[in-house]
Image (tube, rainbow, N blue to C red; front, side):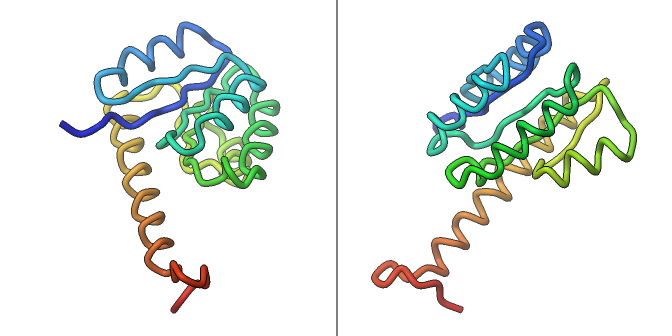
Amino acid sequence: MACKKTIIIAGKDEKDRKNLTSLLREDYNILEADGSGSAMEIMEENTSTAAAAILDITFNIQGGIKLLSALKRKENISKIPIIVITGKSDEKTELAVLEAGASDYIHKPFNFKVLKKRLENIIKWNENIAVARHIKKDNLTGVYTE
């Protein structure tokens, strides 16, 4: 049996976090963060094990975008793909979230099966990128090859 991958679920709404956790628990190890400070801390502590993160910024979109930007500026965290969930479906919010570094954007209400498939696809894509980076890098010199 394959080892479960770890997903970080961050957001202010405990009910939403618990719902996502219960829906994903069967397939993933889940770590929860209840605010921006704890989200940053949990992501920093789990950079080597986190396969992805889900960041719900429904209650504070501007603060969530700032947090996302801060996370993506940290080299050790920047490689973790982050799916952002909001209650807004307007183009301005979607663009701001994607420009801040989100791997994907989903607005509420969402279909859980779609969220789960997007999560699976993003994790696979990120794993493929990591393999490609490893293959291109010469282990002896640390230099990237063509």
